[in-house]
Figure 1 (cartoon, rainbow, N blue to C red):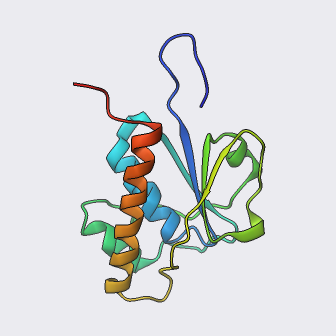
Figure 2: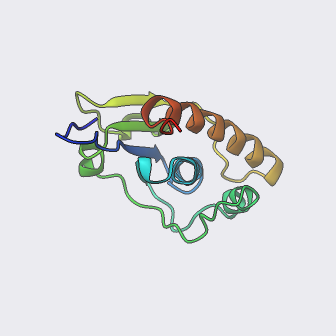
Length: 143
């Protein structure tokens, strides 16, 4: 994480999956919702689709998180350079690696083509991983 003379900088987290239409969008939605302004959230894909998976949108709406207006974005070298933490979800060799970054690969089933029950299970697993990530990199301030 970047250092400043005053308060510590908020970490930037990049979620990457192939199409940037399901897993990475759900993870980004949860991180933004749960951590708020304690983090900067980015998501991208090595081969982005033209729209978010509608079943992922539905599953997140059940949690009160609206990702319907998000747009899949192409993964750029700059987005990796700008990030402190890079979470990959099945993008294989398409994800650039840079020294000094924290990398995690979350082995998650792809929600593409799956029904709502399966996508809910993927969503719930993502939520648990995002909550653990927040506890490590951006815990809530003590009351």
